[in-house]
Image 1 (cartoon, rainbow, N blue to C red):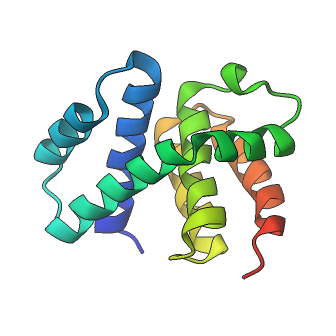
Image 2 (cartoon, rainbow, N blue to C red):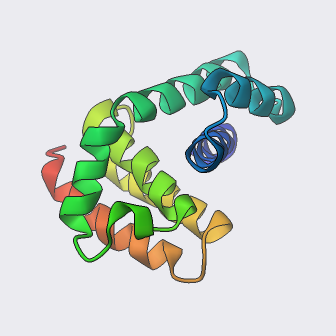
Image 3 (cartoon, rainbow, N blue to C red):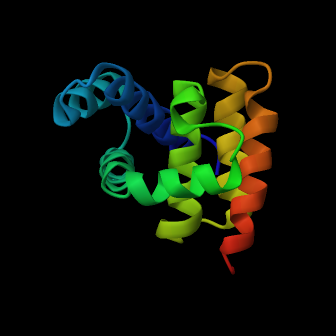
Length: 136
Protein backbone atom coordinates (compact mmCIF):
# COMPACT_ATOMS: atom_id res chain seq x y z
CA UNK A 1 0.00 0.00 0.00
CA UNK A 2 3.06 2.24 0.11
CA UNK A 3 4.31 4.17 -2.83
CA UNK A 4 1.91 5.55 -5.42
CA UNK A 5 -1.29 5.32 -3.33
CA UNK A 6 0.33 6.99 -0.33
CA UNK A 7 1.66 9.71 -2.63
CA UNK A 8 -1.84 10.07 -4.13
CA UNK A 9 -3.33 10.45 -0.63
CA UNK A 10 -0.67 13.05 0.20
CA UNK A 11 -1.60 15.03 -2.92
CA UNK A 12 -5.32 14.74 -2.08
CA UNK A 13 -4.50 15.99 1.43
CA UNK A 14 -2.54 18.94 0.04
CA UNK A 15 -5.48 19.82 -2.20
CA UNK A 16 -7.97 19.58 0.67
CA UNK A 17 -5.68 21.66 2.88
CA UNK A 18 -5.31 24.39 0.26
CA UNK A 19 -9.04 24.44 -0.54
CA UNK A 20 -9.89 24.58 3.18
CA UNK A 21 -7.41 27.35 3.99
CA UNK A 22 -7.61 29.56 0.88
CA UNK A 23 -10.96 28.90 -0.79
CA UNK A 24 -9.14 28.47 -4.10
CA UNK A 25 -11.14 26.84 -6.88
CA UNK A 26 -11.14 23.05 -6.46
CA UNK A 27 -10.37 22.11 -10.07
CA UNK A 28 -7.49 24.60 -10.33
CA UNK A 29 -5.88 23.31 -7.12
CA UNK A 30 -6.25 19.63 -8.03
CA UNK A 31 -5.02 20.13 -11.61
CA UNK A 32 -1.96 22.07 -10.47
CA UNK A 33 -1.02 19.50 -7.80
CA UNK A 34 -1.55 16.59 -10.20
CA UNK A 35 0.63 18.29 -12.84
CA UNK A 36 3.42 18.50 -10.24
CA UNK A 37 2.74 15.03 -8.80
CA UNK A 38 3.75 12.72 -11.66
CA UNK A 39 1.26 10.00 -10.80
CA UNK A 40 -0.22 7.36 -13.08
CA UNK A 41 -3.60 8.08 -14.71
CA UNK A 42 -5.18 5.63 -12.26
CA UNK A 43 -3.76 7.48 -9.26
CA UNK A 44 -4.65 10.86 -10.75
CA UNK A 45 -8.23 9.59 -10.93
CA UNK A 46 -7.93 8.34 -7.32
CA UNK A 47 -6.82 11.82 -6.16
CA UNK A 48 -9.67 13.53 -8.02
CA UNK A 49 -12.19 11.10 -6.59
CA UNK A 50 -10.89 11.43 -3.03
CA UNK A 51 -10.97 15.22 -3.14
CA UNK A 52 -14.41 15.47 -4.75
CA UNK A 53 -15.96 12.80 -2.51
CA UNK A 54 -14.51 14.28 0.68
CA UNK A 55 -15.85 17.71 -0.29
CA UNK A 56 -19.22 16.25 -1.29
CA UNK A 57 -19.56 14.41 2.04
CA UNK A 58 -17.86 17.07 4.18
CA UNK A 59 -20.87 17.81 6.41
CA UNK A 60 -21.45 14.14 7.24
CA UNK A 61 -17.72 13.58 7.74
CA UNK A 62 -17.43 16.65 10.00
CA UNK A 63 -20.36 15.41 12.11
CA UNK A 64 -18.37 12.23 12.71
CA UNK A 65 -15.29 14.24 13.69
CA UNK A 66 -17.43 16.23 16.16
CA UNK A 67 -18.95 13.06 17.52
CA UNK A 68 -15.61 11.38 18.16
CA UNK A 69 -13.57 14.45 19.11
CA UNK A 70 -16.18 16.37 21.11
CA UNK A 71 -13.58 18.38 23.02
CA UNK A 72 -12.43 19.93 19.75
CA UNK A 73 -14.74 22.20 17.76
CA UNK A 74 -14.05 21.48 14.09
CA UNK A 75 -12.64 24.96 13.48
CA UNK A 76 -10.16 24.53 16.35
CA UNK A 77 -8.63 21.35 14.95
CA UNK A 78 -5.54 22.27 12.94
CA UNK A 79 -6.28 22.52 9.22
CA UNK A 80 -3.90 19.64 8.45
CA UNK A 81 -5.32 17.31 11.13
CA UNK A 82 -8.90 18.20 10.15
CA UNK A 83 -8.25 17.26 6.53
CA UNK A 84 -6.33 14.08 7.39
CA UNK A 85 -9.38 13.06 9.44
CA UNK A 86 -11.75 13.98 6.60
CA UNK A 87 -9.76 11.88 4.14
CA UNK A 88 -9.56 8.86 6.45
CA UNK A 89 -13.18 9.04 7.60
CA UNK A 90 -14.25 9.16 3.96
CA UNK A 91 -12.19 6.02 3.28
CA UNK A 92 -13.45 4.25 6.41
CA UNK A 93 -17.16 5.10 6.35
CA UNK A 94 -18.00 5.96 2.74
CA UNK A 95 -15.54 4.36 0.36
CA UNK A 96 -14.94 0.73 1.41
CA UNK A 97 -12.05 0.21 -1.00
CA UNK A 98 -9.40 -0.28 1.65
CA UNK A 99 -9.62 -1.97 5.03
CA UNK A 100 -10.17 0.15 8.13
CA UNK A 101 -6.70 -0.79 9.31
CA UNK A 102 -5.09 0.44 6.08
CA UNK A 103 -7.11 3.68 6.14
CA UNK A 104 -6.06 4.40 9.73
CA UNK A 105 -2.44 3.48 9.05
CA UNK A 106 -2.31 5.74 5.99
CA UNK A 107 -3.84 8.62 7.98
CA UNK A 108 -1.35 8.17 10.83
CA UNK A 109 1.53 8.19 8.33
CA UNK A 110 0.19 11.42 6.76
CA UNK A 111 -0.12 12.91 10.27
CA UNK A 112 3.49 11.99 11.06
CA UNK A 113 4.68 13.52 7.80
CA UNK A 114 2.60 16.70 7.68
CA UNK A 115 1.17 17.29 11.16
CA UNK A 116 2.50 18.41 14.52
CA UNK A 117 4.13 16.18 17.14
CA UNK A 118 0.72 15.25 18.55
CA UNK A 119 -1.11 14.82 15.24
CA UNK A 120 -0.53 11.10 14.78
CA UNK A 121 -1.81 10.29 18.31
CA UNK A 122 -4.84 12.56 17.87
CA UNK A 123 -5.68 11.16 14.41
CA UNK A 124 -5.20 7.57 15.59
CA UNK A 125 -7.45 8.16 18.62
CA UNK A 126 -10.29 9.74 16.67
CA UNK A 127 -10.10 7.14 13.89
CA UNK A 128 -9.97 4.30 16.41
CA UNK A 129 -13.37 5.48 17.66
CA UNK A 130 -14.73 6.05 14.15
CA UNK A 131 -13.68 2.55 13.10
CA UNK A 132 -16.21 1.09 15.52
CA UNK A 133 -18.89 2.37 13.09
CA UNK A 134 -17.36 0.48 10.18
CA UNK A 135 -18.34 -3.15 10.32
CA UNK A 136 -15.77 -4.70 8.05
